[in-house]
Picture 1 (cartoon, rainbow, N blue to C red):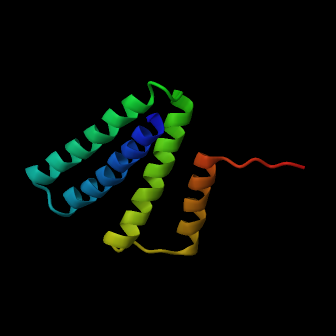
Picture 2: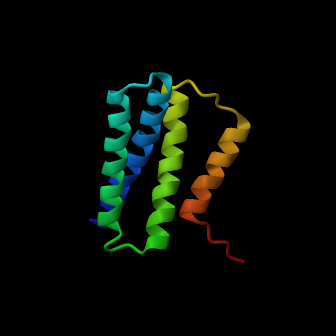
Length: 104
Protein backbone atom coordinates (compact mmCIF):
# COMPACT_ATOMS: atom_id res chain seq x y z
CA UNK A 1 0.00 0.00 0.00
CA UNK A 2 2.94 2.32 0.65
CA UNK A 3 3.90 2.30 -3.03
CA UNK A 4 0.35 3.24 -3.96
CA UNK A 5 0.55 6.13 -1.48
CA UNK A 6 3.81 7.21 -3.08
CA UNK A 7 2.18 7.09 -6.50
CA UNK A 8 -0.68 9.28 -5.20
CA UNK A 9 1.83 11.66 -3.63
CA UNK A 10 3.46 12.18 -7.01
CA UNK A 11 0.11 13.38 -8.34
CA UNK A 12 0.12 16.03 -5.63
CA UNK A 13 3.47 17.17 -6.98
CA UNK A 14 2.29 17.10 -10.60
CA UNK A 15 -0.97 18.93 -10.00
CA UNK A 16 0.72 21.29 -7.56
CA UNK A 17 3.10 22.43 -10.28
CA UNK A 18 0.17 22.82 -12.69
CA UNK A 19 -1.65 24.86 -10.03
CA UNK A 20 1.38 27.14 -9.67
CA UNK A 21 1.35 27.66 -13.43
CA UNK A 22 -2.37 28.50 -13.31
CA UNK A 23 -1.76 30.88 -10.41
CA UNK A 24 1.00 32.64 -12.35
CA UNK A 25 -1.40 33.14 -15.28
CA UNK A 26 -4.10 34.72 -13.09
CA UNK A 27 -3.38 35.53 -9.47
CA UNK A 28 -6.45 35.07 -7.27
CA UNK A 29 -7.29 33.38 -3.98
CA UNK A 30 -9.02 30.40 -5.57
CA UNK A 31 -5.92 29.45 -7.55
CA UNK A 32 -3.68 30.06 -4.55
CA UNK A 33 -5.94 27.78 -2.50
CA UNK A 34 -5.63 25.16 -5.26
CA UNK A 35 -1.82 25.29 -4.92
CA UNK A 36 -2.05 24.76 -1.17
CA UNK A 37 -4.58 21.91 -1.45
CA UNK A 38 -2.69 19.98 -4.14
CA UNK A 39 0.64 20.16 -2.35
CA UNK A 40 -1.01 19.25 0.97
CA UNK A 41 -2.51 16.20 -0.74
CA UNK A 42 0.93 15.22 -2.04
CA UNK A 43 2.72 15.73 1.27
CA UNK A 44 0.03 13.79 3.15
CA UNK A 45 0.44 10.72 0.95
CA UNK A 46 4.22 11.10 0.93
CA UNK A 47 4.17 10.97 4.73
CA UNK A 48 2.01 7.83 4.64
CA UNK A 49 4.34 6.18 2.13
CA UNK A 50 7.41 7.00 4.21
CA UNK A 51 6.08 4.93 7.11
CA UNK A 52 7.17 1.85 5.14
CA UNK A 53 9.50 3.12 2.41
CA UNK A 54 12.88 4.63 3.39
CA UNK A 55 13.28 8.38 2.88
CA UNK A 56 16.04 8.03 0.30
CA UNK A 57 13.90 5.84 -1.95
CA UNK A 58 10.57 7.60 -1.36
CA UNK A 59 11.98 11.06 -2.05
CA UNK A 60 13.80 9.98 -5.21
CA UNK A 61 10.73 8.26 -6.63
CA UNK A 62 8.38 11.07 -5.57
CA UNK A 63 10.49 13.82 -7.13
CA UNK A 64 11.25 11.75 -10.23
CA UNK A 65 7.60 10.97 -10.93
CA UNK A 66 6.55 14.49 -9.98
CA UNK A 67 9.09 16.20 -12.20
CA UNK A 68 8.40 13.89 -15.13
CA UNK A 69 4.66 14.32 -14.77
CA UNK A 70 4.97 18.10 -14.43
CA UNK A 71 6.99 18.29 -17.64
CA UNK A 72 4.43 16.16 -19.50
CA UNK A 73 1.51 18.22 -18.15
CA UNK A 74 3.35 21.41 -19.12
CA UNK A 75 3.85 20.18 -22.66
CA UNK A 76 0.28 18.92 -23.11
CA UNK A 77 -1.79 21.53 -21.28
CA UNK A 78 0.38 24.65 -21.12
CA UNK A 79 1.87 24.39 -24.62
CA UNK A 80 5.47 24.33 -23.41
CA UNK A 81 7.94 23.44 -26.16
CA UNK A 82 8.98 19.85 -26.78
CA UNK A 83 12.50 19.63 -28.09
CA UNK A 84 15.44 17.25 -28.02
CA UNK A 85 17.08 18.91 -25.01
CA UNK A 86 13.88 18.61 -22.94
CA UNK A 87 13.49 14.95 -23.89
CA UNK A 88 17.14 14.29 -22.99
CA UNK A 89 16.86 15.85 -19.53
CA UNK A 90 13.47 14.23 -18.91
CA UNK A 91 15.09 10.89 -19.70
CA UNK A 92 17.89 11.65 -17.23
CA UNK A 93 15.30 12.37 -14.51
CA UNK A 94 13.58 9.05 -15.18
CA UNK A 95 16.86 7.13 -15.29
CA UNK A 96 17.99 8.79 -12.06
CA UNK A 97 14.74 8.00 -10.26
CA UNK A 98 14.47 4.44 -11.50
CA UNK A 99 18.15 3.67 -11.61
CA UNK A 100 19.95 1.48 -14.07
CA UNK A 101 22.06 -1.50 -13.31
CA UNK A 102 24.96 -2.02 -15.64
CA UNK A 103 26.44 -5.50 -15.70
CA UNK A 104 29.51 -6.70 -17.48
